[in-house]
Amino acid sequence: MKNIVILISGRGSNMEAVVRAAQSEGWPAKVAAVISNRPDAAGLAFAQARGIPTVVVPSKQFASRAEFDAALQQEIDCFAPDLVVLAGFMRILTGSFVEHYAGRMLNIHPSLLPAFPGLATHRQAIEAGVPEHGATVHFVTAELDHGPVVAQARVDVLPDDTEVTLAARVLVEEHKLYPYAVRLVIEDRLSIEHGVVRVLDTRLADTISH
Ligand code: GAR
Image (cartoon, rainbow, N blue to C red; front, top):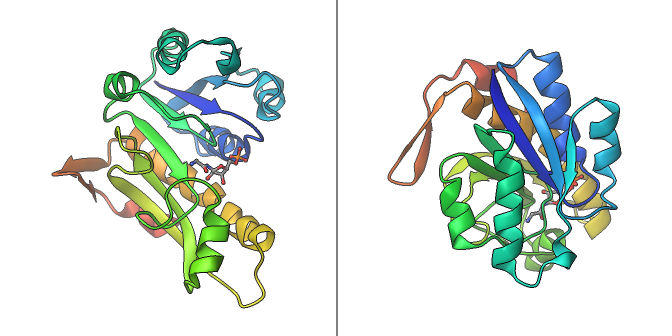
């Protein structure tokens, strides 16, 4: 049984989607812990209700990014993670933290990377007038919102879309995309060659619709 540790900062709906899929699809993995950098993260309640250990490492109480990341790493490693899943974890990570989890840390970003890294991605997409937007799951590397892409989900940008309506449609896709991508990693169905992810077995890809 592999261990997944999920990091959140807020609502935690992607964390919830991964937890539900791991349990209902009988993955050979369990969500060993949910860790937040904010004590008020709403997602903590869902994890606690499911009996998943939760930890808060309050980023505001650390003088530097390096000290926070060191404390966070210590907490994460208590759960012997095979995979660390960033699910709306709104922190810029230090190079040594990223290096420590190289090849075993995923992030979901609400855009079709490499388009629109950073914040306010839905506004960026509307202002750029792109016909399509979406979400990307990628391995985390030192460069923010970069790294080998595992999977993407697309939505059309509609003429009357606002940031709110577009974000809501993307989020529906995120909740399918992230469990799909995490499962690919957990089941060792990926290889990374020269920074490009290859899916070794397409059976799973056939079973989801996005
Ligand atoms: C999600 O849309 C996720 O893609 C985004 O934050 C939201 C978190 O929602 N992540 C980022 O912007 C990271 N750069 P959630 O807490 O309900 O999963």
